[in-house]
Amino acid sequence: MNTTIQYDYVDHLPADFSDRELRADVRAGLLGARKSLPPKWFYDKVGSELFEDITRLPEYYPTRTERAILTLHADDIVRAAGTRTLVELGSGSSDKTRLLLEALISRTPGGGSYVALDVSEDALRSACAALAADYPTLRVSGLRADFTHQLDRLPQGGARTIAFLGGTIGNFEPMERDAFLRTLRSGLQEGDTFLLGADLVKPAEILVPAYDDAAGVTAAFNLNLLDVLNHRLSADFDRSAFDHIAVWDAANEWIEMHLRSSRSMTVQLPALSTQVDIDKGEHIRTEISAKFRRDRLTAEMTAAGFVERGWWTDEQEWFSLSLWAPA
Image (cartoon, rainbow, N blue to C red; front, top):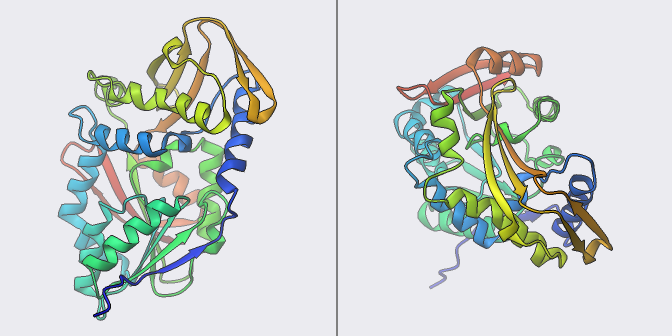
């Protein structure tokens, strides 16, 4: 008996994509006046495991709140969208997505289609194999691509719903977010929709602990970024010389995570043939996580060429899922 789990897999990235991107990001982020690194480099094996631990912390509300909204409204979302093909950007483990997929399968003759897009081949293959095994009528595909500049590689046709969950939209700077939304909109056709998970503005006493928990798991997650650079670039960061900082920027309405140096140092980056001088008390910004108000999000989406087709939130209005169609 053939027990091979069947799913399609397409790779649009060169074998050295990750190494080239990391080196470019480190050069751009650490050699400038205001040091920063993008949050995508958090997620090596250790970082991914730590993030899974974060999602189970009592302070960290986004994952469980988004899941609760999906539990109540996945069928409403799929019905409102008319989804036949679900395409997920930055799919990761595709865990919460199962709620949408079960609604899709129940409403679609033949089971519908799911396309997982991620830059990690390991994550894609693991998620796709599990989904293909658990949902045999679902047509499952893995697409290795970078959604920040390869949205043109998304498969066409099939009443697509493009899902961007988890509040990841908040990791973009405002200009980057506008460019992303406009590019996505330009590739949508009549009958397509965009499902967006966005975290909402709430008091700082709720927000800050979600990114600076009492157990120190988020601190370990942030500091692990230095281990990633040490491992992949042969750097010599001393993680014991950095502190994890999370602050609420009320003017921009976003959380910032930083690594703050407790002493002056010169860090060697042999893989880049350079070094980085870091002053005592200097910060490396490692993440922004923007929070939204409905009117502001609506204005941004309208400016990018979308019209609202649905809005779902929890009782406390801490997190939102919204559905958009091309205007």
